[in-house]
Image (cartoon, rainbow, N blue to C red; front, side, top):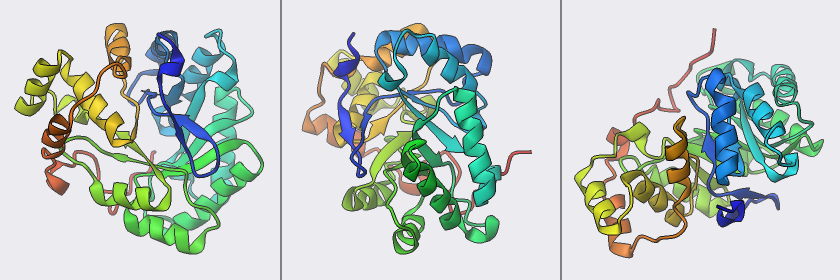
Length: 284
């Protein structure tokens, strides 16, 4: 399976990002090298990690030992919630490059806005990320879990618009207001928890569409994301599942199937992760 089967999505800074990636959230460091190496063998060329995942070094090792050139693999990482103050953010970013053993990262994100922490000043944090992009050590910069109000504040007070906003999106929680704002302002949406950590699997609608299309339920849901234009990065430790999640570009869902899945949206009641307006977790 060729890596070029994955479409590239244009970013507002002139760069591109593979629409399908491999996520390593909750993948133990001891399992990360093997999982990422398998993903790269299958054809993934986009790996999504974060400082708070604790497995950046293992992602870097997997890429270095994959036989691929560093330039062939798009690597994303995210700022630890404990390091939002600009000087702390700069030191934390250096630690990411050191862990990856790379002189640049393709995309670096503010992991959470934390509006009730740091005097609510995520703009100063964002300006630090703008600096990483200016000096070339972050090819692109963006945010994660930002609400419309947070994005509007960046637009009013900062020099640049985030390239992406990585947010919770799945059939039970379409997060449509934030997606629509991003679409209008050139911010690409990345969908985390794309199958709601498996919660949507087994839904009668998903089961029925999977049976009709001859695909697995996970493939159907991931294909729904792809056709909506979002960037998605499922995660798995299972080699067979890693390959299965990659095989979503040789079929399409018709309009009726797409609408049936979209209609599963439960609004905010479908959210399974924290609410970014109130989430204030700082690691010990």
